Length: 542
Image (cartoon, rainbow, N blue to C red; front, side, top):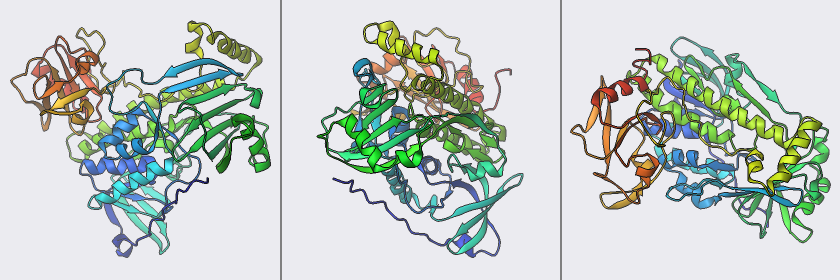
């Protein structure tokens, strides 16, 4: 009953750069071919940016890595052409349950409403996600050069480029990049090379991951236990992945010996206590880990930009690592394209640090709060936590206090300098800085989804009467008008409800599908000014 997945081995190929007598300079180089680096390459390619990816390995991730992927990253991957495979292969789920000892204390539904193309969450092994991304990357060889077994040794920063010393099976060579995107993980060589501060908190606790292959009747839900009988005074987690693989997570305590904890004779009894003596299973992977909540001091060092774990780390509770890394890329690439094309000043990229460091702080705060609830640091904290869990069995007021990991949701850039003032009267809708919400639509008689007609460029979404203008421009920039009710039909009225568009509304939407501004009436001057502000042409004080 062992997992039958076979890790692919991708070939090392010598490039023409290695044969050149002088270093070759490229527009963009990405360090790291994991989830975030591959996503960055595909998003750049969709925008016509040529990229090179360097990775020191020649396969996809091995072992227990990311498992849970939230709705917003799936929407980003949908735009890049890979989400359908992930959703088809993954385990979609909405319902989570929290137990205190043996009793149900709380349950939640991540997506109670209908009318969204992507599910609230899927569980899927990271190696599948990476393989699908690699397969898609290989379809874009004209724009993406994926180079395996290319290890970054060192780098030298210059004013308008970065020089990289790279080691390959054929020896060492130097290559140059006008822009460098560091997606090389928590132990980032790039971050070390620029001497960036990476500060935060290490948690003095240890957790054991056991990925097991088994046939089981457990429902497709996230189950989390506080102080269960099978693992007294600790916590435990169970949820399903593809191919009958289940992720089990056990809190072990800071005093646990990593070597002893991962021995089969110690793991198997613990798993049997959770699953029952009659459940047959095979161990696919076992590891023990300690985690940290920390981030880089600046996501941008001149022409070097950090994303994913190279920029921030969080605890695994809440699935905020890979999910927020994908959103880093979603925020970055359209800004990079504009700067490279001369459509925005170089300083426009500072908004990437502004918005994504704000999101990182939000994720760190939520991650730290979850960890403090799961692993109380004092007797008083433990008493409070247990009281909350006990009360939540019967009383609604206590349930929002239960925290087994606040699952990943996008952070609205509510204070972003790219937002225009939200001055008109809205009853709900999508506040500037917030990502757009999906809704079922019909285009030219064909059923579709709202998010699939947004993205790549600025869009002016109009509810109500069709304006005279089909686009609004500011300098070299323009935003196309899409009218809900004209070209696009609001199939079930959900778009108007979610955007408070019943009495008319106008939204300026960025290429990353975040709202830059909104109004009750179509005003070309206000829209042009908001377009300029959203691209760093003017500031809120001008």
